[in-house]
Image 1 (cartoon, rainbow, N blue to C red):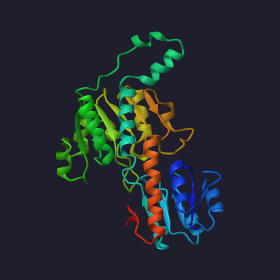
Image 2 (image 1 turned 90 degrees about the horizontal axis):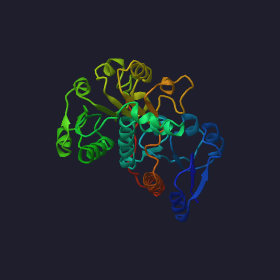
Image 3 (image 1 turned 45 degrees about the horizontal axis):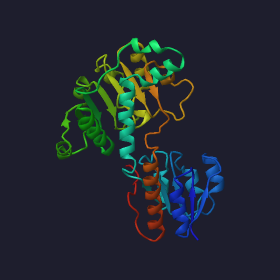
Amino acid sequence: MSTCFITQPIHPEAIRFLQEQGFHTRLASQPTMDAVIAEVGDAEAIITRDLGFSAAAVAAVPRLRIIACHGSGTNAIAVAEAARRGIYVTRAVNANSRSVAEMTVALMLAAARRVCAADAAVRNGNWGFRYEGAGIELHGKTLALVGFGAIARDVARIAGLGLGMKVRAWSPSVPDDVFVAHGVERIASLEDLLRQADVVSLHRPADASGQPVLDAHHLDLLGNHAIIVNTSRGSAIDTRALRDRLVAGKLTAAALDVMPHEPPLPDEPALSSPAMILTPHMGATTQEALIRMAMMCVHQVMDCLAGKVPAHVVLPSG
């Protein structure tokens, strides 16, 4: 009987399905790499979430054949070390795109209408909050999408067709015909895109250099009325520069579902920022997305252990 070791809880339907197919499943006692290394044993397959799977963990599993990532980001997985051992690393491509897109739009609306601050005001007896500053209507505003992958395309549909926003995007890697097919205007440079933006939504991680996509220079291209939303990666934006501009009134609001360190460090600038909505990397956390991601991982594991090449294999960079 093959063993699939799971580093963090996944949807129970996927676990039941694995067991029905004759697999033995084990869950780490704690979502830490130390616990994983101590407990993984002779597993042939791993399903991991944001914990990832380190090089030390790879070295600790002699029979390992596949590491299936319950999501699209594999930066916390030792992909190169796995490849040296002939171990597949896979990811759950586009399984959570719609859920993250809906979270993006929810954060846009919450920031534009000051929903979190209004909730806190009512709970604190301040019904007069409604007179303390008007919100912003998104209809007719320009949405600037930084990156134009699957999530951004879903955001474009929801915001364009549902909210009547003017959607523009920048991506150096997406072909022109994709922009045409989605009815989104392609902007040639990130700087030009930001100069036009009322709302900026980040859908592109930092590059290999570690430099954020939006740094102080880019933030200064935005108008005082602008709103920023990040549901991509915490490293995509300089949160200190973002905080400073919110304090100075050079931006209207921001909403982050991702942070440079997760959980955030005590001195994380975003934690002390006004007009900032923070959520705990929950964009993909819907019942529907969790089932899709878990089942995609399960089928990748089953294919691998049946001698097939699983879908969505990740190769080492460089």
